[in-house]
Image 1 (cartoon, rainbow, N blue to C red):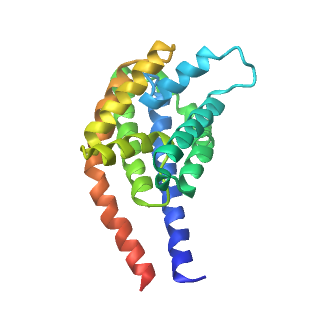
Image 2: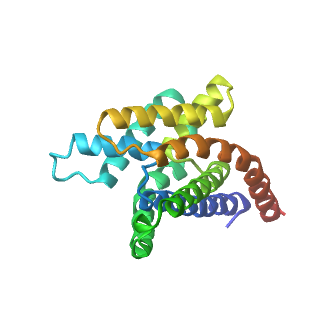
Length: 216
């Protein structure tokens, strides 16, 4: 395997590590049952709107919306679409299902409110950290995260601010369609963007260091 192929493989592995970490965070705040993350409020709203179609599941709606975002980005600026974007679209749901299977017995939803809120906040931080690994892997980014990235790049506005704005749009659209909105949604919308803004340069240095070692 030549150097470029080895580097690409490592970047895909890093992306999958970040994706797994991010969806552990998603699973934690979903199990806390204090409100879904902004993107999943939208997914829930769409799922409930079209619940009459028996073949639809939350995961399938998630994939469909992600695919729609990819199609739009192919028109707007296709260089953002990479193999990792497709992996995020396909693997996100199954990873959440995996963590849900093993974490559900803990019954986080039955914990006292302060404990559930702490799990929610922890989940948001884990999500933000994993998300920045995915972004800085440079192997592709999840479709929902790409929305904020593309807008930030095109407008030259800080990612953290754009992320909050995009999340609020997801929440509003999802809520109007019947998605679950709660204190957890507010915490996620206000916390994930700023935390990601802190972790982005940190993980960029770490990943660049790993790649440099491989290239020696």
